[in-house]
Length: 167
Image 1: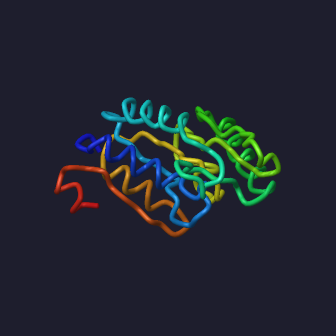
Image 2 (image 1 turned 45 degrees about the vertical axis):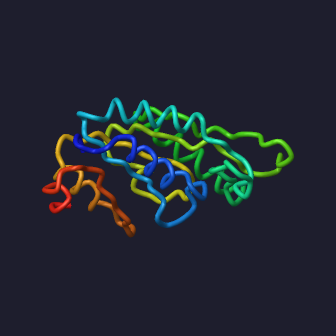
């Protein structure tokens, strides 16, 4: 929301969306961001995603490990292709070669700016894909959030107590 601490939101969003390479049920998959802060937050997310260390997550400083197998890599690529076909701007998502681990399925986490909540955004891919939809109001975000058919773990970034209570 417009009152959010963008630095705190950036750190929480990045970790929640890419930790465990997006392969846990509570991974952040959908980000509804208010139009008043969208440009600033998306640019900061792009920079953060581009600098993420990818490799063996047991090593110090490495946040993004491999996908579980080639099928998971193919599912991620298919979801990104579908999003592009729906008009999304995709940032990242490409395969990455990690020295000494050439057989692993390593990918750069993807930010996907969607024109609307549709297609792969409504399915769990279990990959580091964060779909972003711009909203104009908290109620719009709440409605979109509730439109999912799978279980939800949700957060709200705001400094406005009324918004938090509404959430």
